[in-house]
Image (cartoon, rainbow, N blue to C red):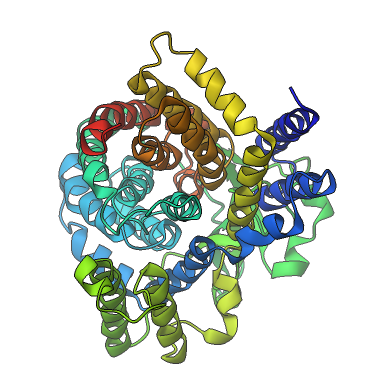
Length: 513
């Protein structure tokens, strides 16, 4: 074992520990690891920076803006209002009306704004019909994840693997190629939710926010803290929330419990704060990245109807253009150097949305999750460090050694489990980027096609159902639904198993070894 291998293994172990303990944001943790590799000569400055200019990473950045444009157009609000039944209906019947459409939407848009808009509306709707909102909020998050399995842009994880494939000289995925297996997982997952979510999810826990109203101009607002909230991990008594935001904290909901004695508590990402404040709070902080969700019991007010239809038309143009642009007869007729791929159409769509004021162009940096982008860029560099040092080959040899007959089916299953554990403990993008070099080394040592291994990484890295920390949408619904950690384990673990079984049996049939 060389010195470089030892360094990389130690740094990766420390990185994993820091991510699990949540010592700082994932992007900074991964960037710290990359800097260590730079200082030890495992990475050159060029290799360290390659991820920051990667097409896949920049495509993810622009997709945040496209999703924000669709969100601000009010399209989501109009869709969910038409989907939600207005009369008393069974839980299964309501889910059958809501979840498939949500899965289709999230196949083409970022999951987070879908959940941010839909979650408070669904919660109010359930309350009005006296149905437990807890039967719908975790399924809402899971439906967005299931939809992401089906397209190249359904989740940033797919774009990360796609970009790493292209860097390795492979063709990458077409727009709907992953849907060949993703559609089976999505259908099976939705059917599972229809039949079992009511049995496995808790009946709504009572929420008793303070109702003392000495001032009629003040009302209660529900706010979920994001990672950008400046008071994360600080004691509540040491952070003057009233002075910063002009609101009084009445209670905090965390992991299924409600706290009113706040003196010894610290703020945590995903906390749901019940605030007593005036009407200006939502206007002032509604577009802020400090809060994941702000809800005061009223619907989001969309832009005009014409812009809403224009935004939908741009989305169709982006998806249709990228799909047609992948066809061989189109590519053969294009001038040299011109490529009508997803990057091209996302870039065009983003610029048109900005100039058409579908999203506020002056605030565009607010709508991009920079930590996710830095995580993706650094994950590319860490992947390169694993290749340069020989760690990916070493891990591949170890995985092969776990299988007595070196069966690629067994190795495929092992790779799924490893990637899925990574994604539940750290982040889905980092899990995918760390697994890709191992997959490439596995296929090379076995002398088989890398495609089944790469596709299984996409499925395993996105299958974050068992914990609220693995996927931001899970964290959002945990706060607004007042769920406990164990609620996700109870309903999510069988969904992980369903994804595993379908992936292992279906993927080799479509992408042979």
